[in-house]
Length: 370
Image (spheres, rainbow, N blue to C red):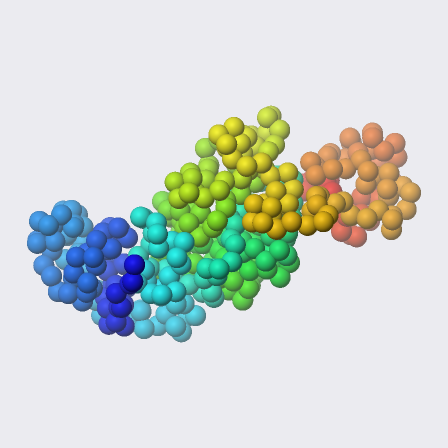
């Protein structure tokens, strides 16, 4: 259906309204459908809006009080461009079509960089913040494979699986998009600052909350509906039985998206959420090709997890390397399995780590790198 054109002045009033406490996207859209002018909505009294069922008592009080913030909001709106932020309303042509069709889609988005391309396949990679080394490596591998195949990667830029998925896509030179649970001018977590700066150059950062909005626990479940909404498929790498990743998967199911999960051992807490999704009918991801084939991308050679070429390793280095896998092992077990002395084993592990073959995940726990 053709969208009514919105004037720049109306965009200012929409910015004001979208910042009003307790004013949700559904209410804003209902008001627009009825009055077709945010300036007219501003000029209305709160009582008739409440009597007509648009606002409840608390919203009506907030609406009245927020009118005094109009000039402040106008000033903030005018400075968005100075911060490299674009205000994209649900009435604008560039508003994502994947979101537009959703009932609870945001009334406006704050964007640094670009929005995902409408004509390109897109996948979300989500999972636990406190992920395992195996999960982190798997998420990065998937992000890299998708990026290389030209598939856009969406995630929440959180610690753990989210960050690894973004990182893999960036390493492949692909396009990745981070959906924030705070304002677009805030980097959260701070440890992802370099990623926060790089993503807008390769894709974009997207927020439903305006500049200056600090992250809140209540923001993240709502943020997840945007992650799934922007994607054609949702991939859960590691998740507990009750987690934000499963909320994203639930949003995806409600939105008609395809859900995939990476299976894990029954004894691993971080695999229980994924195994639950698989029991409920989610697609199983054993290698990147499982996702690529969903998008109609086939390769002559499967993109299975290839370990690093061992040809450049000396005999004893190969002995130590062959004892490791993606699940971290403690040094005592490595010494026992390879049959070398503790000192010699530590020297070889250090050499393998410096050459990029392995990683020390914690105090004297070692695992292979993909």
